[in-house]
Image 1 (cartoon, helix red, strand yellow):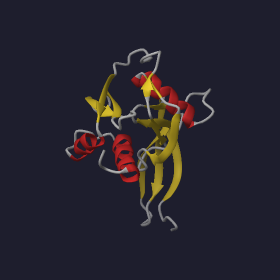
Image 2 (cartoon, helix red, strand yellow; image 1 turned 120 degrees about the vertical axis):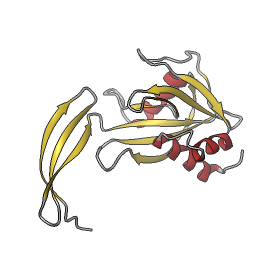
Image 3 (cartoon, rainbow, N blue to C red; image 1 turned 60 degrees about the vertical axis):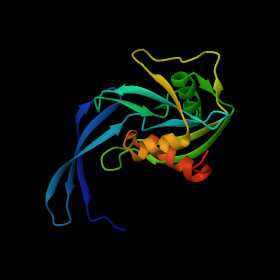
Length: 185
């Protein structure tokens, strides 16, 4: 498909630590000009993980998210660091840091674009099977306040469909896992 929508220019409106905000000048098919917001995530990508215990239950984290002014139940996730050679390294680190669990059995589950209408960020979602408590326990970053919670897949699916889990990466991970590995435990 050839787009009849054209970007004619881009200017920076705000420079942040993690993201920059740009104003794009867009030409619509009718020739009119409009400004669009574009959020440029400086790292551009990250990783998250759906941690599954040997008994099939799934580990999630609950933390306050200032952007939505809510405490959110979600899978462990984080942005790529300069020293990470790939997103799997990031996923392994975030699993241990945020949950205090570890695994030797990781597989790539899917990749999601976070908000295609206005942001370039994408995430690789990994499955970690047979998770065990790490000797280190949780290793939280300064300012993080994360509670670990454990649920069955059926409980999580209920939470998705009852709008108790609204985070897009978590919804995608839980539903993809349910489709690929079976809904019932």
